[in-house]
Amino acid sequence: MSFPWAKHYEPKHPLMRWMDERLPLPRLAYNAVGPGYPVPRNLNSFWNFGVLAGLALVIQIVTGIVLAMHYNANADTAFASTEHIMRNVNSGWFLRYLHANGASFFFVVVYIHIFRGIYYGSYKAPREMVWMLGLVIFLLMMATAFMGYVLPWGQMSFWGAQVITGLFGAIPLVGEPIQTWLVGGFAPDQATLTRFFSLHYLLPFVIAGVVILHIWALHIPGSGNPTGVDVKSPQDTVPFHPYYTAKDGWFAGAALTVLALFVFFMPNALGHADNYIPANPLATPAHIVPEWYFWPFYAILRAFTFDFILPAKLWGVLAMFGSILLLFFLPWLDKSPVRSGSYRPTFRIFFWVWLLMLAVLFYCGGMPAEEPYVMMSQVATMYYFAFFLIILPILSMVERTLPLPTSISESVLHGKTTDAAPTGALQPAAAE
View (cartoon, rainbow, N blue to C red):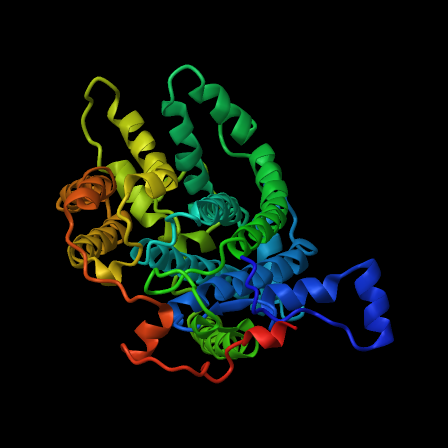
């Protein structure tokens, strides 16, 4: 969004003027993350997780490039090359643990980023494209993470690939050809490892490209805010730098400290012990589970236990993929004119129940496919879909919302008014 009171980039040094005329990268940075980008003054800490997601992507790309220099994508030597990285490569153990735990870090911040978007209505007009591009990033992350989990070629890697790729076989007519094409044969082997390594290396750069589109789409309408009220005056905004760069920097330091605790003191806490056993197609693990960030979708997959018109396995596959694809239609399922859940008391109740059911799915996805976990998964799955397909559309029509503040400044100042702009706000004269 173009704010008339935003500062404009005017290079002072001759070299910077020369650069700006030929390749205006400094101007782009100034307008994207600098004083030239005004943002709402009331953003809370949940808005820091977008920057953390970008930081996590950088960590994954940098560590992944170095690890790829030492990894051998061969079914006979992949496991040994992983051990070689851990034991013989200088700081190899650090790079591998940072990459493995960095994936979990990436998913944690993205999940919180998504939850914030749902609670504060960040998917509503005019930010539908921002929301959908974010979901594309999420899907690419899931594909990248799954393929990366296969690369160590341990027991859980091999059997995870066997189970997940086998899901495509449940699709009528085209399922088995897709499965054979994806695996490169009739079971995970050398062809599977080669394909997954190639795609695992490529997709993070695709994610980086979509991230650029995501940020570009965000800058057109401007950032949302906890009230859901549009920016109306200079008093509603502050420059992104230095106010939010300082806040993001502090938050990034705190998050990296937590990540460092996992990397140095409990690097295997989020992994599975069976992945330190070489892959053996003749020995099936007692309990096959994906990485923890896939657990809710794995629980939805296993929640269907009987055939009804279609086979139960196909229902599970459709529900698992549908649970994510459903989010793309969220801007049209929730038609409430009020964006923020802070002013929707009834929505808040159902949202927290939905979050609780999601926690149940997380828990059940890591448990064996037996009672009472199957029944718990079924109840949580029903509520998950009912929240989006039934509850939100009805709430849009019948919910009584709280009165919105007339402006962002009013929400910050608690109803007080002032003729002077707050410290750091951009005055119209500053743009001249």
